[in-house]
Image (cartoon, rainbow, N blue to C red; front, side, top):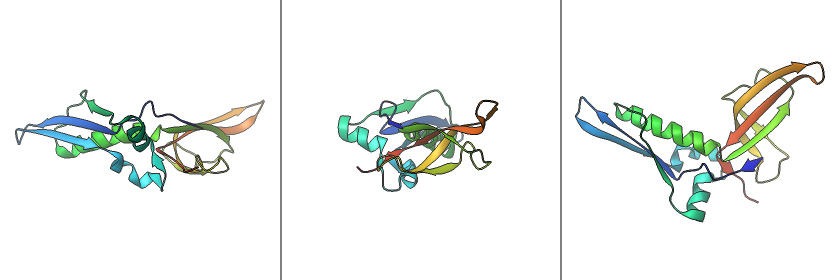
Length: 146
């Protein structure tokens, strides 16, 4: 497991234009977008804020046309980066329950890394040397207390 604040942001802002209402669209996603996934852990964004201050990002490559699209894009990008705060690789017995998008509980990693993880990559592999196995990459947005 590794915890890396390099890709973390304290907020992500997305802007657009509502053609029908002829008005600007803007939404800023913050730590609240991932609060349900933290389970009492400290998020990478909050640790970044405490250590180095505000680090905001604005997305300019999209063109949302409704407030719902604007919010969804900002929150999706914030969650994607936030979940990459803690990343680990592992090997497990093969089961259909291990799939991209599922959550798994990992334990016996110590108080900083024990907990619920999002599966970002899953490979079910068979070879003659090691047989059937599943290799995975797991991510989560927070780190436990020491």
